[in-house]
Amino acid sequence: MRLTERIRYVGVDDMRTDLFERQWPLPYGVSYNAYLVVDEKVALIDTAAAGFEDELLSNIKNEIGDKKIDYLVVNHMEPDHSALQKVILDEYPDCEIVTNAKAATMIEGYYGITDGIKVVKEGETLPLGGVSLRFHMIPMVHWPETMVTWCEEEKTLFSGDAFGTFKAVDKNVTDTKSGIFEDYKAEMTRYYACIVGKYGAPVQAALKKLNGLEIKRICSTHGPVWENSIPEVIALYNKLSLYEANPGVCLAYGTMYGNTEKAALALAEAIRSRGIPCAVHDLTTENYSFALRDVFNYDTLILGSPTYNNGIFPPVRQLMEAVVDRLVKGRKFFAFGSFTWAAASVKSLNELATAAGFEILSEGMPFKQGYSDDKFDASGLASLV
Ligand SMILES: Cc1cc2nc3c(=O)[nH]c(=O)nc-3n(C[C@H](O)[C@H](O)[C@H](O)COP(=O)(O)O)c2cc1C
Ligand SMILES: [Fe+2]
Ligand SMILES: [Fe+2]
Image (cartoon, rainbow, N blue to C red; front, top):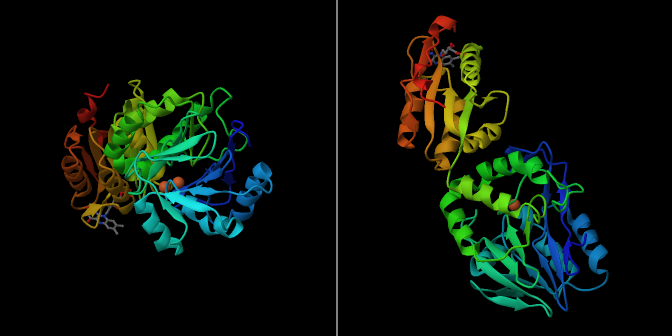
């Protein structure tokens, strides 16, 4: 598909993988975007995941017919984009790989390719004839070798995973239809929270580095090409990487026999009755990525866990560990949950939240055995607005 005379989309939609990285559900699929810059020389930017070789090659041939690819630019080595490098080299034996030194070692490590690699440095350019490509390193967004490729003449940023999102593109390769950014915002936030979330500081450094560019088009490796929503997309990344959140609550819980759940629903009702947004997630029936997304969305985290082996119920611990692992900052925190003989889950959760630097709203709401309204104590939540 033609984005401009020179820039073509040759990516693929994956509607058959259930779990991205074998852990993140894909209810709306995902795309692996690759692009061609067609000039006197032809450059392919990134490839796609294993299993999509025929589709990628056929998309390429549809754009350039029998013309050759001169360069394969490798922005990122995660196999969802690098898996088909060998397929491209087999089809186009004269094609030279263009990448940075760190990625070059990974190309050898993953695929055993050592020849025909042109190593570029920060700010180096590659002329293609009419236009040229310039490379900027954005380490740890979200791997050490990550870089972006900038085409000055087309004002186009090939950004790798940065500004990417779950949810296949279908016919929405570009965000020309109004409302596309809003359609993708939840999945973009979930992608960020799951995959990039730990790297807020490197994302900030990348945003500062790219700040001077007059960007007309962001071509990321997942989701739509951003043309009309660039300010919104950059603002979302800025906000997420600063761990800034909207007023509201992510209330996530686990339960074995329903007692902690009853308390969760009572708390959610009390919070919502005050006009405060409250997203509720049952971690025993839902993958924790959806709750993790809302930890990035909202400034208050409320976790419910029964006491389990003198500690936290494993599904709840999994979410809390994911939050800690992603260095989430500046959240208000409240915990609750049922126990039978010795309360431990709320205390353990409070300890983890304290270590993360969260503001503990109160001692929380541990309750003995069955839940009933007389055990309700949300006094700690009074300060929420
Ligand atoms: C394997 C297992 C381990 C448990 N460990 C503890 C414990 O260490 N201390 C405690 O007070 N209760 C413990 N419990 C009891 C639960 O906390 C209790 O069943 C609670 O009411 C469950 O809440 P729920 O209805 O929300 O699942 C344990 C229960 C199970 C099944
Ligand atoms: Fe990646
Ligand atoms: Fe990716």
